[in-house]
Length: 255
Image 1 (cartoon, rainbow, N blue to C red):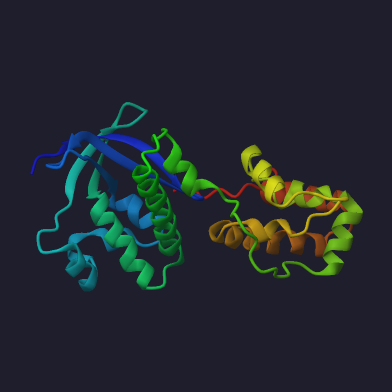
Image 2: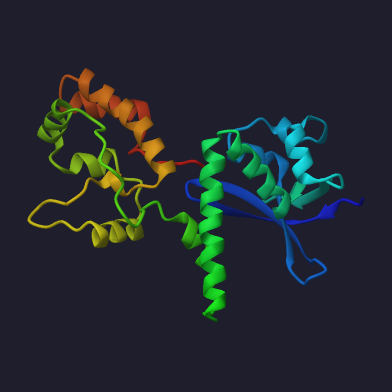
């Protein structure tokens, strides 16, 4: 099969960024044919690229993909002007790859499957009601890190840490060092769902974070809490925070 010349873009599924490709071709039913690369597919769920190579694909996944499964070779022009080669998986093949690894207990694969399922169902229902599709709707459906209802509260830090941190920085400590990754639209949604009344919210901010963001926040909080506990004061904390992070923390899961 000939090498396919494709164009590249980047999609976001929650906090995960994945490169996607197309040659602007349509299948026999008139649908656009889109691809992910084997390399990007594996990296998006923190698996080794070998899991997307024909001879090393797990047996059960091979059975799901079918006897006629093949990966198409592709190449695209990079921003630098160079040409990069990729092994292309169709979106149908991609969905089977994610579902297989979800069943194996891969949390990132589960999050991606959930996001795709939710977005697809909403789009299908909107279509049934003959609602016009607006470009960007699908990305908006999968990318909000603020969920619509609070999850059960869980303690993320001790009262002693809270008292010390607020003593040094006031209530802005959490916005400046824990939740500064939220964009303006997410903060607006959070304020609508969980407004401040008489100086307090009914629920903690982390109760409104999606699973992927919550997991990354917990990892980050461990480092921040360790800094608070081991610092001699506010300035010591700031100096050490700057050395550790180089800037205010951002939850960045670019793939």
